[in-house]
Structures are given as structure tokens and as C-alpha cells.
Amino acid sequence: MSTEVLRDMIRFRNIVDRPPLQAFFEEDILVPDIKPDAARICSSKIVPRLTEKECYGGNLKLGGDLYLEVIYIPSSSGEGGAETAFARIPFRHEGTFEDSGGELEVTPRVEHLEVSIINERKFRMKTVISFAVREYEDVERNVFRGFREGDVEMMESSVSLTDAAGHKKDYIEVKDEIKIKEGMPEIGSILRNDFRTVETYRQITPEKAIISGTIYYDILYMSDESSPEPVWMSGTTDYTQFIKLDGQEEVNGSDIRMKVDDVRAVPKRDEEDNMTLIEFTTGISTRIDTYKEKRINLVRDAYHSRDIMDAERDEINIRRFGGSGSADASIREKIDLKSPEGIEKIAFISGDAIAIGGEAENGRFIVEGILIPEILYSCRDDGSLRSTVSEIPFKAAVQVPGLKAGMEINVEITVKNISGEKISEHQAEVYAEAAVLVKCFEKESISYIKNGALIEEAKDRDDNTTRLIMYVTKGGDTLWDIGKRYRTPLSEIKKINGMDENLPPDTEMEIGEKLLIWA
Image 1 (tube, rainbow, N blue to C red):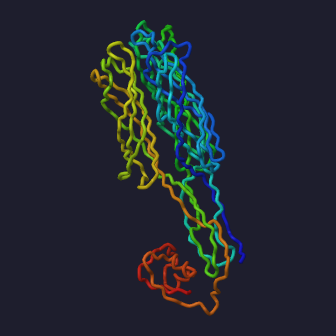
Image 2 (tube, rainbow, N blue to C red):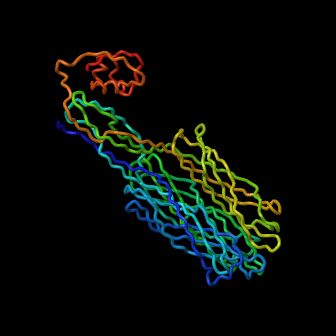
Image 3 (cartoon, rainbow, N blue to C red):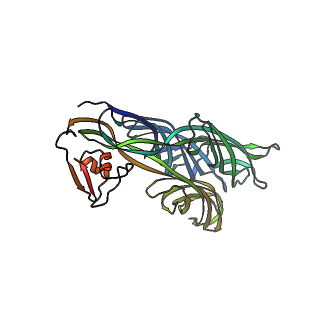
């Protein structure tokens, strides 16, 4: 039979974190012509930058550049000399990806790097890059609302979700000038720099976002002397970023990610013509997602009191922002350095940190992480640089309002300060402070009725077959189950049995309860 179906449209934006893609790259790198021959590699660093992405036919095509930096000891080096070689390596990678048509954000991260020396003019680089994929999925669904005519019983649910109402990206360049401390030797060349950024303040309105951050930097340079030595300097620079938003409705929350994209640091002469300054320009990309709590009504189940109803079902995935919290983790550990000749001094320490797990406990999340410091040190016999990489496990307790068991947890860790000192000829002690940010989300997949049709007249409530029966409830019976089983309006069951007319349909009945039902 034909009757008009009532439908409605629901719209919201979901954020889906897809499984990361992983790629292996191997390349031989020539030492630049202007650089001396290489005798030994001290340290290496690689920064991936994504410049293109394309999703089609179940594949995600990525392209960009790997910026490699290698500190090495030249074969012609005197005592303590070191050089840095740079290379830009274009890359392409294609991986399987289920495309849903949403906007994609892809973030590369270095999982492993190995650089070996082939000969005095050639290095071999092997690296594993992980690409985290976040999709901004615009959800539009037609949902069933009933029939224009007919006695249809519907179990409706009002579902709360987090609508990622706004998504904005911005870029800012932060410039500053650093002066070396009194007593430090003048700058000959910069060997290495590490820059990180951490958010310190945010203010979000429908029209704009005001975000303040701190840049933490560590710079290693070689002194401008006849017998050069490595010199390490650290510091911070504060900045504020203003991002224009789209004037949307008042938001309930926000998620901000700040990342150092590129750094240009060059030595500079001061007013007295001494090489005592370092001028740097840091490019920082910022992503801001603004959240708004939204409620949607879905018909979870339905039946018709007279006719057989054919229901077309579907599922919808929703995400609810639970809350966030942050804390600083202090890390301190002794490291054994494999230096048979002994350590002269610690020249430089850089570090990254990753989360490997955690556990929810009494409204807080206990983060388990690993600090990965690379320690450059000069040897006692000839002052030449060597390096070692270690892993230091640590834990951090972060208070997270709204945290519940079973939630999806996202953890971000940024190393703010890292330092260390020699404590013996074969040991160093590393100190680090890391900013730990925890965000929790509740995910749910909900089944609902997408469309419905009345396909057969089953009975006429006015004929002589209608009868009053007594039903004895069983374990797990709900009011809805009983009404649907006998295709009887819930209002009739409530009325004839003296129940509260506001009793929810999913109310579980007591075992052995006797109900009168028109069937």
C-alpha cells in the first residue's frame, strides 16, 4: 500500500582519524662540492615536508621533500672540526585509502633514520616516515520521521554529538635575534638547530582566535677559532597569532595543533662587527578546529499497529568530545655513553618524545611515553664529536575532566627543555621537560531507520478477531518489545494497565508482571 513517507535531513561534520600510512625511502646523497671530504658521521636529522596529496580510486598519492642534515667529521679536520651537509630529497608515495570525499589532513612523522658513509663523497640515507591521516567528513543523511497517515509507533532517540563546525589553517613567521652569552666564543658556522613550539594561551570567539605560544630552541655552532669547538645555546621566544574565523555560532570547545614547519638561522655581526648574533625566522603552521555540541533525533525502531512495515536501516558514526587536560612531565635519567677513550664534554642534546600507551584512572590519564634523546659529545683524546641515541621511559599523570573508560584517547607530547651534563668519563645525565596534552573522545555507531514503507495490510482493529490477552513479562522485556510483538500502540498498553503516560518505551519490565494487551 502507498502512503507518504516523512523524512528529514541531518548535517554535521565528523573528524575521523584514519590508520596511518608508512613508507620506506632509501637514497644515496653526495657531499656538496663546496664541502670537504667526509671521514665519519656524527649525527643526522631529517625533516619531511608534504607539498601535495591526491586521493582517487582507493589510493592516496603523496609527494614532498625530505630535508636531510648530516653533521660529519672531515678527513682533513684538525682537532675538534666538524661540518654540516644538507640535501633535499624529493619523494613520492602511494597507499591504499578508502575515500569518502572529505577533506584530508596528512601529517608526516619520522619513525626511523639511518645514515651511513659509503665513501668520502657519498652518504646512504634510509628512513621510515609515518603519515597520520585525519579526515574532515561532512555527513548528510536523510532520516525517517514517520508517515503522513497511519498509526505508526516510533522509538526516537535524541543523540548528542560534537560537530566540528569550523576548520581553519594559518601560517605565521616568527623572527627574532639571539645574542650569544658573554664569554662564549664568536660564531663560525651553525651545525644544528632544533626548534619546537608549545601553546600557552588561547581565546576563541566566533570571529577570531587569539593564540599565544612559546618557541623553544637549541642551537649548536662551531666557534670561529683556529681550533674550533662546538658551543650549545638554548632559549625561548614568545609570540601571538591572530586567526580570523568565519563568524560562526558560539563554539563549545576547540582543538589547536601548532607545528614548526621550517627554520632559517644565520650568523650575524653585531654593531662592533663581531659575529655574536644569530638571526632566525621560524615558520609555524597552526590548525584550529572549533567544536559545537549538537543534538539530532533518530528513529531507532518503528512498527505499525495495523500494517506490516518494511524498514530500511542504516548506521551513523558519531564522535563526542569528552574533555582535555595538560601537564608537564619532568624526566631525568643517567645514560651510558659508549666512548672507550672517555668524554670530554656534552656538546649538544636534542630530543623527541612519543606516547606508547596509558591508562584511565580516577578522572586522570596516566600517559606512558618514551623520551628519545640524541647526545652529541666530544671525545677526550682528540675532541672530535660523536653521538648516541637512547630511549628513556617516563610516565605523566594528566587530569582530564569528562574522562570515562572506553573513550578514544589522543596524546600529544612536545619536548620543551632538554639539557644534560657529564657525570663521569662514560656517563651523562639527561634532564628534560615535556608538555603532555591529552584529549578524549567518545565514539558511537548508531543504527537508525533511514526509510520505511507499509507493504501489507495485516489486520483491521475493528474486525471481530481483536481480543484482550494477558501477557506475563519475561527477563529483558521492555515496553517497546511487547508493543512491537503484538503491534499494539504503546498508549493503549499504558492506558489499559494504568501506567504513567510518560513512561519511556525502553523501560525494562519486572519479571512476572501481568499486562493486558489488545491483540
